[in-house]
Amino acid sequence: MYMSTDSAVSAIPSGEAGGRRRVRRGAAFASVAAVFVVFLAASSVPSPLYPIYQQEWHFAAWVMTAVFALYVVGLLGSLLVIGALSDHLGRRPVLASAIALEAVSLLLFLTAGNVTVLAVARVLQGIATGAATTTLSAALVDLEPPHARGRAGVLTSVAPLTGLALGALGSGALVEFGPAPTRLVYALLLGVMVPAAVLTALLPETSPRKPGAVASLRPRAALPAYLRADIVPVVPAMIASWALTGLFLSLGPSVAAQLLGLHSHLAGGVVVTLLAGTGALAVAVLRSRPASSLLAPSSALLGLGVLAALAGTMDDLLWLAAAGTAVAGVGVGASVLATFGTFARLAGPHERSAVFASANVINYLGNSVPAVLGGIAVTALGLRTATEIYAAAIVVIVAAAFFLRLFQLRAERRVVAAPCE
Image (tube, rainbow, N blue to C red; front, side):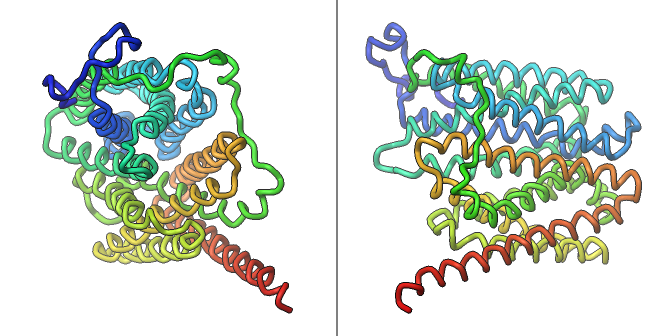
């Protein structure tokens, strides 16, 4: 993106691409992180626009959440099928293909005149994002500076929430203050894809071609039996945090407009940003804490934040709704660290890929299915009642996660104390 001078590139060894000039590894690491954020920002851009689409095309709330869920379907399918492809074809070809597919989806968004085209665009965007995030995550690890071990893991955790926050906020601002509210933001993102594609062509290839590309497309998801007892307390926290994120991304702007009276489209973006942005900040601050120490506190924060946000929404107390959302965002960020940290700690290197695939399945089903059910509830019961039910369900789920973790800690203490008896 900003690599245009000779100081930013260096001639790579003659064995790679015939001596073509490539971005230096340090600059490449930062650039890959930036592209990562851009992809996730693009994925949250439609959120402030959903109320406009709904008003213009006259579709029900459940259709809006179904369109959101289609993005998740494409994303999850891409993660499971294409996740390991860059290990065989190389990082650059897979990332370039993801950028091209993202550009196609943005063109569809730009020209969409009905909900069918919008749905197709979201599916393609999900596929592109899934392919890009797995490839970019691997590239970050490949390019991680020797003096900053662990930085790739931090960025991989922070970038998604940061991208979601920036995309929703930027989209809300452009919709509120710019011309052509359903067009301008996609045109700008299309422009960003051009330097992203150029930069991809200049990246050093960190994964040489090797056989097995076709075999790598077979989805691998497994949860070994011996891990399940330790994973069970984690699952409710995963479902609750991703269900809350799904609610904010699909119905958050509608809740802000209809229940809080915030009819500014910028406010719709701020709602998403407040949750995702505080989540990203929590990940950055808590990244060095052991995952096992975060599970119970993250569940408590998530539950308390949701209750406060619900109380503020129902009583028309904007400050309480905002504070509750921020607290819930901290809970989401801490939950991300706790859950993925737990999976990483328990799974052996030979089974980690399949175990993380299972984690993604749980996360994105938790992200999409409750959102669709919430949309159906909005259509049948109204936004206020549906929001109350959705929030109550999340609180029940995080309470289960909290108490399961407490029971697990008590059992662990008994095992430790047993030899002393």
